[in-house]
Length: 208
Image 1 (cartoon, rainbow, N blue to C red):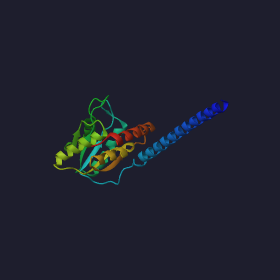
Image 2: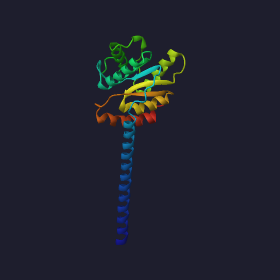
Image 3: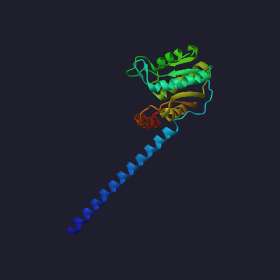
Image 4: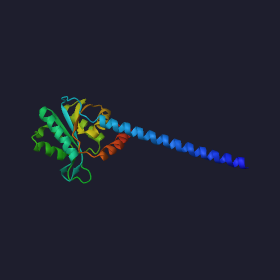
């Protein structure tokens, strides 16, 4: 009996050891993929080589009431530089109205651009998008309607932490997209953590 009890004890110990090893391996793999994905987000956060396209899309970001957030201000500042350099380019400002916002993000962006010297006739307002995927779906539809044929080449503006996901979703909408990255040196690391989960979600669920 003693030999049987010892064998059972040894078997239990081995099972527990195997479980611990499996858990340890899974944790290591999760950490590695987190590091890889965050690295990709950071490495892909730079602007592409500047190219002139007929349309620029500025992706919406948070408002505080009617006040433009620092993230959105960075996007708008980068967009202004592009629009001033290429005065014949038209711009789509894309973003709906979220919680805590008194107006749509698109309207806030439109007002900002006009106040900074961009002719109102160059601005196309897209006030319905509530996600990055919808930014591209709705903006593409408006551009197609205006030019009467499918658009292919566009430039978009966002923040560095958002470039990788935005490029992926632009591609899923059949757009050959050039990225302009707004300065986000002030952005907290928490934003990059949130973007990690957003990228995984978009990779799995956001399909055109």
